[in-house]
Amino acid sequence: MFDEVKSQSAEVITQLLEQAKLKPGDLLVIGCSSSEIVGSRIGKNSSMEAAQAVLSGIWPILQEKGIDLAVQCCEHLNRALILESSAAVRRGYAVVNVRPQPKAGGSFATAVWEKMRSPVAVEHIRADAGLDIGGTLIGMHLKEVAVPVRLSLGRIGQANILCARTRLKFIGGVRAAYVEELL
Image (cartoon, rainbow, N blue to C red; front, side, top):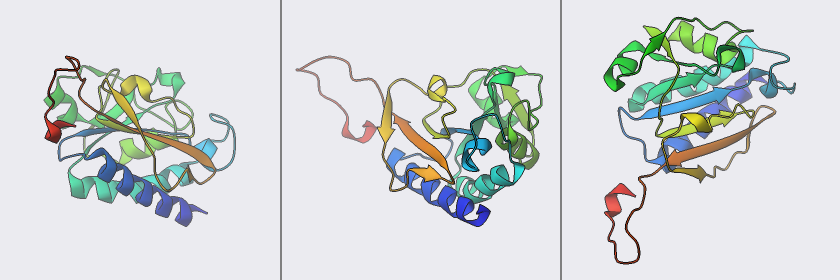
C-alpha cells in the first residue's frame, strides 16, 4: 500500500506544480491526514508509515524544483505550520515554540520536521498553492485569490485530495487590461 501512496504523491505533486506554475522560491502548503490515507477518520489512526510514504514521494520533487514547503499541523497545534527557518526568515514570519508529534501536530508534520535541516513552526503564512490530503482545511493558509486545480488523481491512498493555486486579484473592470504572464 505505501509504495502506491508514494507513487500517487509524486504524481499529484508533479501535476500540481505544473498546473500552478510554481517557480523556485514559491511557497506550497500541504495538509495531510495520515489517518484518512489508511482509510480511517481524520485524527483517529495516525500513521507514520503513511506520512513517510507521502513525504518520500514529494520531497525529491520539491527539492529539485526549489519550492519552499509549509506543512500544516493538526488542530491540536492550532494548525501551525512547519517550514525551513530560512524560508520563514525570508518571508518575515514570526516563529513560535512548538514541535509536532504524531498525536499533537500529526504524523506528516512530524515526518517533515525530522526531514528538514532547520525546521521551525509559524502560525500564519500566505502560500502560492496548496495540497489538502484528507480534508485538513488548508484554505486559511493560501493567498487571495485561490483557484481550484483539477488533477488526474482524486485520492492518495484512501484520502480525498483537493488542490489550489492562487492568482493575482483582477482589479479595474471592463476597460482594464491585464498582463498575460501574471495570470
